[in-house]
Image 1 (cartoon, rainbow, N blue to C red):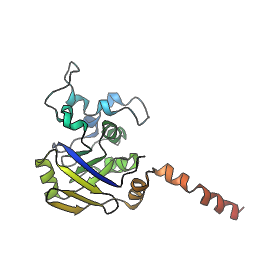
Image 2: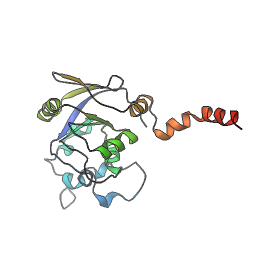
Image 3: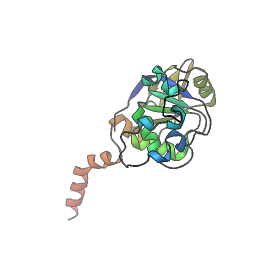
Image 4: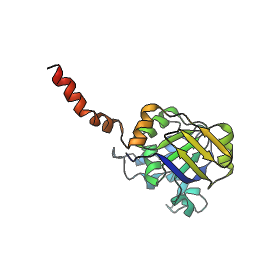
Length: 190
């Protein structure tokens, strides 16, 4: 998992509420359990027409989307199924964080586990972000703080997830870091 301590990134906005994981990545692309290679399928049915040609008016097909690091979603972003492929696809496309006033619980948990920083903000900040696509946003993981335009606020982040982002380890990596302590504990009781 990539270490994330601070982000200074521009945003891409997908303002629709209740975007579900099947819209984020359609089920027909879930053909592997590898977490890599899903970026091309991100919002596939919204990004491409029936002839598999990019829709020029879709925000992820705009050049600015390729350099943005933060996806701002509408309210209740990531609802639907529990597929991990949704945060995998967002991360693989190039986003480092997803921001909304409400992220679906399982989507948020899966995001934390795969290295996509989920940030829940106030309704006021969310409205400002939706109204200002391409805004520059600063996120400080250590302080759990986000700055955007005139807004500065803290956001909730589970302590273990914060540790993982700050140290660039996932749950397995964290467990492997404890190998010496586990071995010592076992040898003391053998």
